[in-house]
Length: 155
Ligand SMILES: [Zn+2]
Image (cartoon, rainbow, N blue to C red; front, side):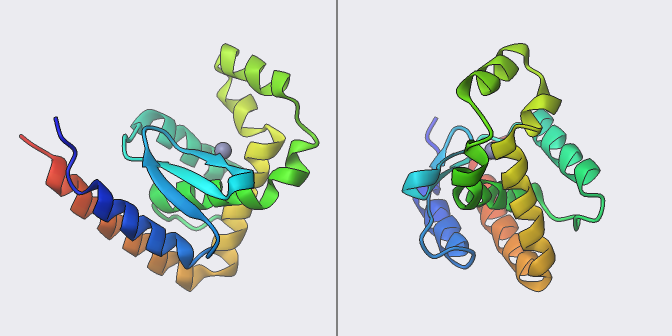
């Protein structure tokens, strides 16, 4: 199977992310991730609804005043949040902590890792400080994703 419209989506997402942070680069991938020191984000085109729901549920439970906006926006902002908070948050974390949590599959503990918590806090703070811009960006991302998904959905 060939995935259509990847280049275009990547361009669109990069253009959108530049409005949040000019120095961040996005590459499409199979899972969401981030190289904080390279200012590079990997944005997944494979959606995993179960883990997305857990991420969003945690976000809204932790921040009950966080605006209800699409997951795509929060995922991107969370990854940009890693870039902006990593250095400080990582001092409170060690790799064993992360590994133990991953092995156990403890989601709650994962979301509470200093770097994860800081990235989500940054995302929520961004949305609260820039409500209008966040809404516009969310619409642009949704549009780009819908265009992309429509090209690739075959009955
Ligand atoms: Zn993260």
